[in-house]
Image 1 (cartoon, helix red, strand yellow):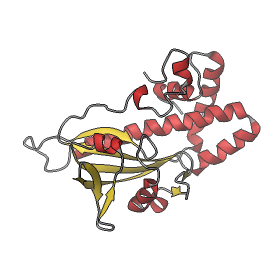
Image 2: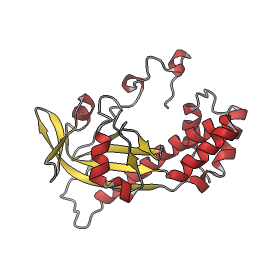
Image 3: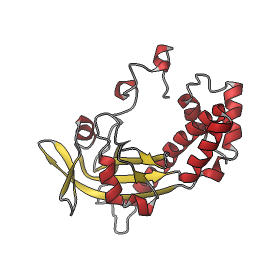
Length: 235
């Protein structure tokens, strides 16, 4: 499988490799990338919901229950200029998990690389999906020059910042994730398969700035090995 260069670079950063040209780590990644497609079965589901605000805090409007509060400062900030929100669930599938368990027993070093590749790959697939959804919304039949285009906020997920992890149970219900994607949210809030993601994207009539990029918004900033070494993990 030919992976986008950004996927390889991100996977190396997830492994803590500071030099993306390190020959040992690079060869490990390239070897695994050649066969990773065999273990990927990308499934996703999404729905668009209207949102309203109470005392500045957004909530998703539904039929049952009538509303779902999106608690925390992150949701308040990102969705402050939005009228709708995209709720997404996506996974690489169970075959990835099975191969990861095999590698953990056979070759732990390869398992670390494989796990990192999976994390980087689902992020990339979500980026592509996000672009496709935005293009679709801006190309709906009946769209005309008098209608304003829509713009997306940053994508953000449960457990990031102060958005509660417990919301994943609600998203599982809203998207019927077990049926549509095979994702099951455990009582802990974690998901199976492991390379699964739920996310929110705000929809606005106005261009939205990137608000959650960089070290200032990362929960690991105080213990980050990159910052201790005088660099960063992002580009």
